[in-house]
Length: 259
Image (tube, rainbow, N blue to C red):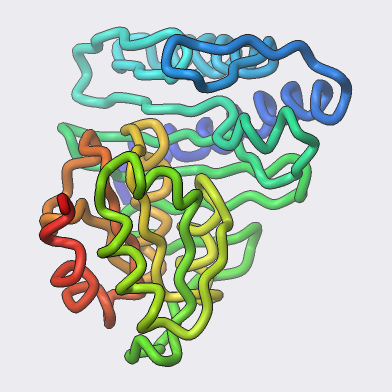
């Protein structure tokens, strides 16, 4: 196993745990909320956790690049880049909903090679490194073997995102074919697919920091994550995650996303 990957993977777990613990101190504790230009919320917990992650990761690996949701990008020279979201699910965080996570993703030469998702309020950590498998705590993760829409569970964040994208009818076609649909927003639907609790997570309106940590976890569990064209661009706003068995059929429904 590549020792440089392994070292960064281990530090990522430590850094995510520390930053998530910091954020947890402010959870369900009347934290002040500000609203950014894109109408998304941000708190001192988001900013403080990102500062911790930047300090820890670049302190250990100063030549790496860094991209965070709150403070932007810092180029590096090593070929590695950290892509992090200090609190994925801030809307849940500020409303006292425990479904939020600290996400730490690692790229090498543009490929997502490792990811950590720490769920402080739920006391779980999901993690994966390319070639090493995906885990929830110490339990190995595997996607489900469901191969029909009629048996499939579909996850998503909010129907409003599909309305904004003008593709709600495509989403509703998928709803009609699947057995159950659950609005487990943000990172959580992706992790549920990775652990075999559902087959599809469909989303529109995401950013690279929403996906970089999750892609290795899904793929090491045997699943697939692509944009709606079938490509691997995590900087596109559309994403489909699946157990792999329903991926192509779902892409066929979503490919003509504008209506």
